[in-house]
Amino acid sequence: MKVIQELHEYEDGLRPPPPSPAHAWEDGKWVFNDERAAELLRQEVERLSACVDAAADSARRTLVGDPLRALEYQQAAVQAQAFKDEGYPKKAVPLAVSAWVVRGRTARQAADQILAKATECEATLLALREVRLKAKARIQGHLAKGHADLANQAADEVLAAIRALTVRA
Image 1 (tube, rainbow, N blue to C red):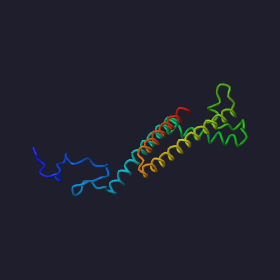
Image 2 (cartoon, rainbow, N blue to C red):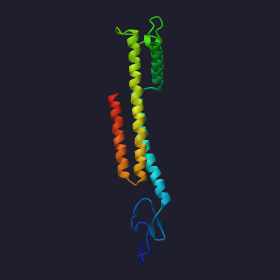
Image 3 (tube, one colour):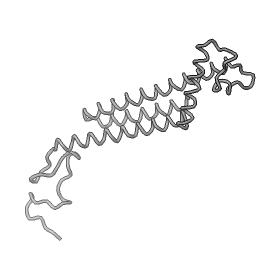
Image 4 (cartoon, helix red, strand yellow):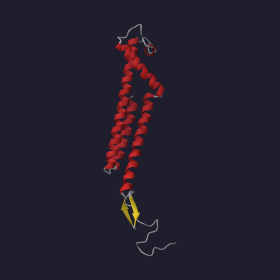
């Protein structure tokens, strides 16, 4: 058992708690460390941003599925647009469009449906990107002002918005 001889002597577990994680124990007192505060801020921005990015990545996978299938759909949209631009010629229906000519659907209807689906998917992905980037900027702004509670609230809000985008799609 150690006995503290004078009030200014501290054992590791007996010193007063730090006022914040950015404080360091120096010369018998807690001193605010600017470098440590900046590092903690950077880490928190990274942590919350990583949460937002992970949710957006998951949403993208839900929205477009397999990346190769997404590429296939993109190519189908390019072919459908070219077919439409040429006036829907009956003797030159692209393979990607003709594959959609089922259940009484005409080549024109197939092309238009492919284009509508591509437009919808693109709009959702752009909305997801916008939500993600704006949220990360808000998070960084709140933390730079020392408002960790607002930064966490912004992260929670964007995660809910991302979930809503995937449910709507």
